Image 1: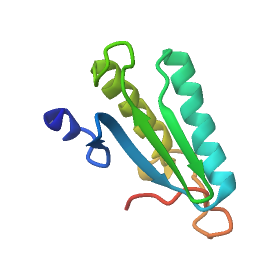
Image 2: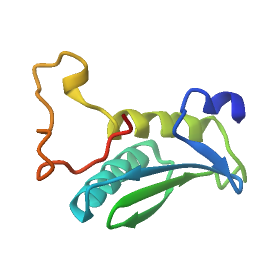
Image 3: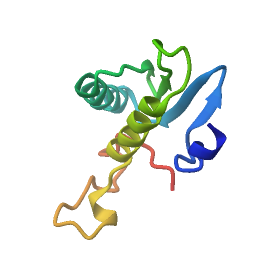
Image 4: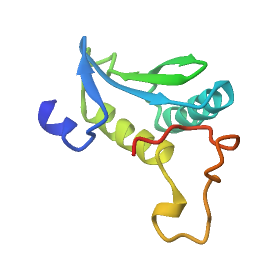
Length: 111
């Protein structure tokens, strides 16, 4: 698990779970993040537990059938990370990304 977590530096292993906390700018951002994760989870048929609060969404993954962490958890964590942290402005995209004005921000990026 420790070796695989090197690929996901903002994720951590705690109490038998693969975990990540995403800071948001408020309730709207938390709901947007939670719904994006829910879409991926349903499409993958591998469902994390989500703790949704005003300023954060915490994701915990564990393969309940295997009673532990498996490749499914790491693959879904990788897809969640890519989706939630995606910023078109960092890759030379024609898409401009969310304006930097705080009134438009919904996610607190880890940079």
